[in-house]
Image (tube, rainbow, N blue to C red; front, side, top):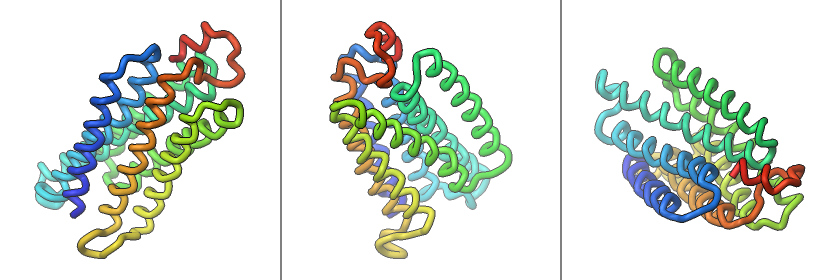
Length: 223
């Protein structure tokens, strides 16, 4: 069931990614960060399904490599969340610095996963802070704006964080037929649906930048 839900999540995320990229927008950079999150999760879920159902980590070198690749795929998703939060919270110059920092953290993460540590906990330690930051960013934006995308974003990040806690605590619906990993995938799919809704609404707004940005030209730069 873990493998099945992984594959289902991969298909679902892949479809959302394709639909998002097919939509015209005046904010291509923001669209790319959303697509990076959805696409990375789709790829990671595909690899996770292979790892759980076909080539488990314990099966040999190939299984170990697949699992490492699964964990590394979570890195770009976390970077995408971080950058979306940066767009909402920071000025354009700070957004660029934030991207540099995110890429450095990603490089360190990939190195640790590749050579040192392959427990899923390390993926949560990277992904959860980025999700928390985006949750805060949506909340701040909602406080200063009437844009409804922030509501969908809050729901998405809230579900994502609850899913991570349930996965860490190993809470499932059934110890064999629907364990904590399968429940995590289900919750994650719901969260991604609301994140996709937030993306569609965000890309249709005129100026979803930080509230302290007053110049339309500055807002356009971070789109």
